[in-house]
Image 1 (cartoon, rainbow, N blue to C red):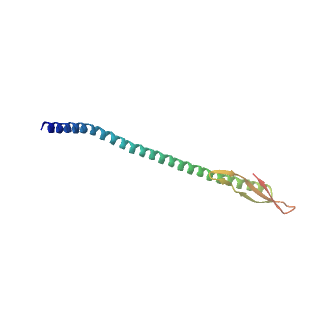
Image 2 (cartoon, one colour):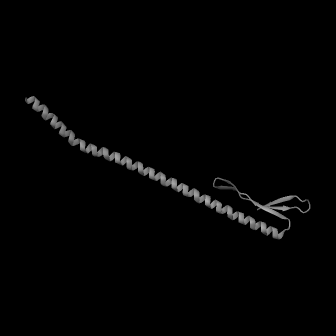
Image 3 (cartoon, one colour):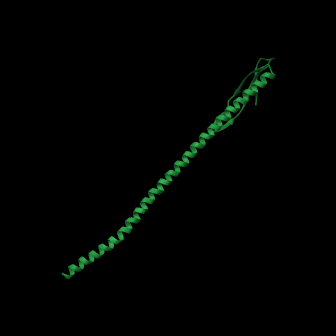
Length: 126
């Protein structure tokens, strides 16, 4: 009978020790899990912010390029009108920018003249 009491007492003490250790272990594991979720959400949020900034920068660059091309077309038209006022053989003008993505590679204004002697067209580039 004493042996049974000792065995029961041993299991009771072991269970109490286990219960005393399990609460801090559960708190620690829960903290680690919650911290992991928080970290993952912050990383995702940062990536989203960076992606939005890239989109805004691209839109700004494209807008600036469109404005630049529009200004250069107006400049080319003004050159054409000035040349037409000076010379009677001015035929037409052309502004055709070549772009690669957001970069303007070729930026040339072409004024087309007609040679009065030969009747052939020739160009002057600005």
